[in-house]
Amino acid sequence: MLLRMRGFEIHKEYLDVAGQHEVLEALRPVLRAAPLYRPDTPFGKPMRVRMSSAGRLGWYSDRSGYLYVPQHPSGQAWPPIPAPVLAIWEALVGPDRLPDCCLINYYDEEARMGLHQDRDEADFSWPVLSVSLGDDALFRMGNETRGGTTESVWLASGDVVVMGGPARLTYHGVDRIRFGSSRLLPKGGRINLTLRVVT
Ligand code: SIN
Ligand code: FE2
Image 1 (cartoon, protein in one colour):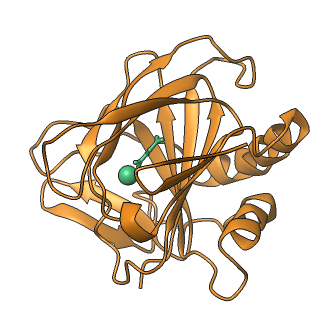
Image 2 (cartoon, rainbow, N blue to C red; image 1 turned 180 degrees about the vertical axis):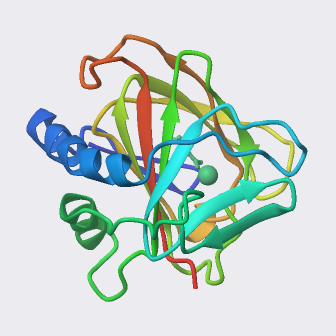
């Protein structure tokens, strides 16, 4: 089922349970090679989510700012983006240009993500595509500038959101997750993947 809200295309139940497990299995070796870590924000506070990346470039944050880097903090190159993840991009965005980065965010019981824009990429004509796995998340959508009214939707495991066109620079965030609402991840919590064309 496709919902459109504020330019966001929300594909509810895009991945069935088998498809969710396929993506999760493909992420295991990625997270072994590039373990989740908790980055610092430019404001000096650690982020609430733990993160890692796959692809040619990974999103990175520390006290000096946000940037894309070719390596995990360990010094290892990021692992390639797994095929079942690329397949979602090819189906919903197209095969002409594949994403450079698959950012992996893990939300534990306490984690959330404040309203923000994704604007560290060079070309906003490419959408950001998000894949939700595990516990439900309350996803909030605002406007192209800070402030104003917002609308929220619960994202469940298997939902895929395309943030493109008018929604590409729209503020968005995650207020909270419903811990334990899904049995996909053995220890609970939520994984969100965002696929981005960076350069
Ligand atoms: C993000 O905006 O980077 C993540 C959104 C989400 O976790 O659904
Ligand atoms: Fe974002």
